[in-house]
Structures are given as C-alpha cells and as structure tokens.
Length: 133
Image (cartoon, rainbow, N blue to C red; front, side, top):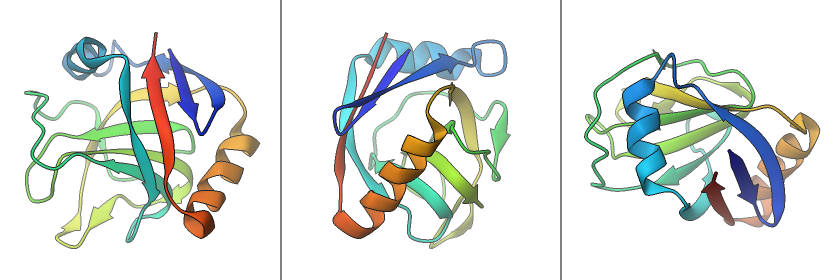
C-alpha cells in the first residue's frame, strides 16, 4: 500500500493477519482520500476526523499506544470515527478519555520524513492524504 501525504509517498503494509476485517473494510474504500490534522490530546500523531462514518468493524488488534508508523482506525464509540497515524510517542485519546484503535497498517519507510510531516502539520496546518494500493 502507498500512503501519500502532501505529495510525499510512504510505503506501508496492511496488517491483514492481525486486523483482517478492518483491512478488508478499508481496502474497499481505496483509494481513500482525506486531510490530516495534528492530534489534540494524544501526543505525536496526526489524525483524519471521519465523523459518523461507519466501516462496520468491531475492535481487533486494538491499541492505545501505537508505535511510530502504525496506523489505527477507531471504529466509533465514545468518540467519532477516525484514523490516527503515530509519528512519535502517542497515547491515543480524545476529550472523552483514552481510546483504542485497530492497528490495520504500518508505514515501513522514511520515518524521519514522517516525523517532519507530523511536526509541519502541528505548526503549518492540515495536509492532504491518499491511501492506495
């Protein structure tokens, strides 16, 4: 899979053994386009707010502490549906408290560039993102 943020392409793998239902649901949506903004409560990450969007998946391989490069889908619940991408230390949270999201993809290249984009999103604002096969 390719994740393109603000024109820069990252290689990523879908975690199909750990989160098969989430990967299948997300694969159906590709190419998936949106905008990332910097997280508010979680630490070093960016997120895509998705409101009431329903991917019709339950929790699988869910975590509140993703490693840099891990991509999570929060499938709805006490907060809105969202995708989170960690670029550093993260404790996934919202105004409602700690959340856990399905770890469905992992960026496998250019972690320094991912950090650079994350910090730039904090200071310069939202950026376009596209997930594709």
